[in-house]
Image (cartoon, rainbow, N blue to C red; front, side, top):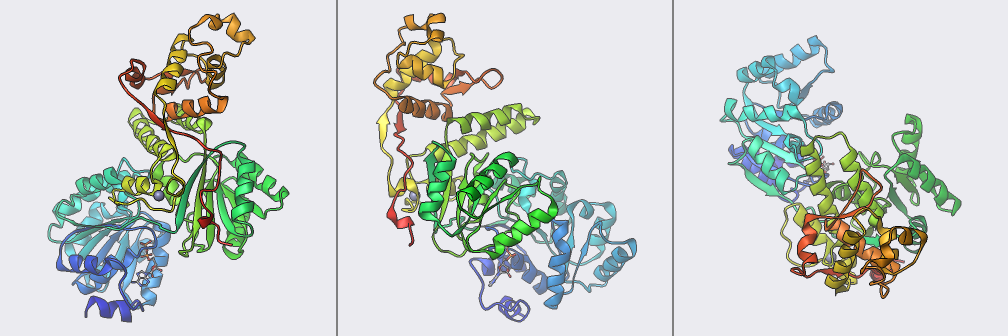
Length: 518
Ligand code: ADP
Ligand code: ZN
């Protein structure tokens, strides 16, 4: 039997996709492999076919116990001798599966990681012939990732205990650091790596400066996506409900979805979304798992996502049919402050917070970037694309930049002289020389920074403040009242040792007629 013949006769497909064939050959030969492939890319065949080609039983480690029964049923349908071992089996059923393994009657067995590492199970594996180990959702081994599972760490033991058995680790989410951690922790130094592009060329990435939120969303939907399906992500359940109700009042078919709705309502809304052509679902991130609707024409974010991984996963639900789709994000200073506050006020360990700050910084850099957004995204996932994409807002309408050195120094000085305890509104009024009761009471009208920025509009100062906070020159006092403080990083700027170029914000706009398809 060859890989091709199994592909055709057992699975009913005509040709391999991408590097499936190369992965299958690698594993069948007995070499380890690490596979990064987006969801839906076809990872399962990469270990199922080698398990059929090699003598013995293939052992698939998967944390998704709920999916095991379905996967096994589908394989049996195709004539593959498959089974699973997890906590849902009775003792008798479990013994039956073990017996089949011992006599070599199984091609594939799915096992939950915590079970695999029990002495009883390891002992069983020692007495069976094992074709290979497939470690699915391998990012679960990474503390850097968002889905860490301690039991995955123990899978390292497989490398020594079964030194002659090839292993394959697979994941759909892995940036550079996560990938290194997978290699390190699962001892896959000798593994051949198969990294697939995560690019979704038909999705146009856009970030709009927040100004009125809802109204901007309505205009975006009405002008570009009338009578089309889309997902609008919001941070809170409350905002989901309000936004969905408001859209309905504006004549747009919209339904809410969040974990606070009862099971029946969620299932009903999800079903309607799958079936209907022109429905907008307003949702928290709870919406998405298992959504496989090909004609989602847009994904809008009304709040800033916490990380690029999350953002990419959510936007990835748009345009699965390959036709043009929009990923549209609203962003402003309040988002930065809110996300920073969520991190600092969370119960996480200091180590975890440090990781979350890093992830947020990468997300902020994505929002503020003046060059191709797609390049930023793909580089985050470890790819090295060379050319700008031509299908994101910064490519379609390159933002102007300006020398913000002087203005930044004025602002930072004003922050310093007013005592590092005031928020953006106060500082803007101060710089523009607006006399009010507070300014007089604090004696700030006497300061040299009072009125030195009258040539800038409040909006221009607001844009500068947002960018200085996003880049970490200014910190927000998250415990007190949100006053702005100088960060260590601001020093060279204040001393005139560093120049700063920033993007010039424009009014929210559509970058090009190309995106419009009607
Ligand atoms: P992943 O685990 O990467 O998310 P799956 O292994 O579940 O992806 O495969 C996604 C879908 O693509 C499945 O419906 C599968 O049957 C199909 N598929 C995989 N490989 C091929 C192929 N070579 N030709 C056609 N369909 C394929
Ligand atoms: Zn681009």
